[in-house]
Image 1: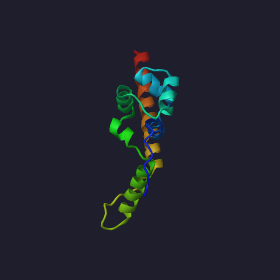
Image 2: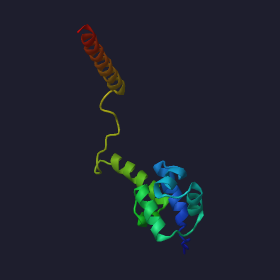
Image 3: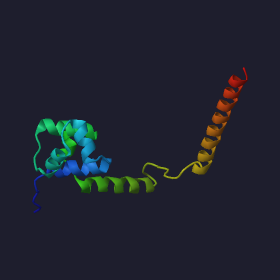
Amino acid sequence: METQKPKHIGRNISRIRELRGIKQEALAIAIGVSQQTISKIEQSENVEEEVLLKIAGELGVSAEAIRNFSEEAVFNNIQNNHEGAIINDGPTVNYNCTFNPLDKVVELYERLVQTEKDKIGYLEKLLNK
């Protein structure tokens, strides 16, 4: 029989924050506290509901998602989605580019150069008047 260990809300906040690429300092500023306060919250097993709701809002998840966060579920979901894309009966997902990214970069630079040429032509016309 497997025993359930209690959820550590602070650790869940930390992992979600890291997965979202948000630094403690940025989260602290967003909810109006210090970076040290965020550090303490992430070390706490329980977090006040009001604070949890603010943090959840800034992380773009629900408070319930923070409470029930599981790294195993995240990785299983990623793995299952990838495997589902391979199975013929599953949804088809195309992970390959349908265009050459270098062509897009060249096209962008050509447009930028043309814009600069247009600006120079316009400024020369203004100077000649």
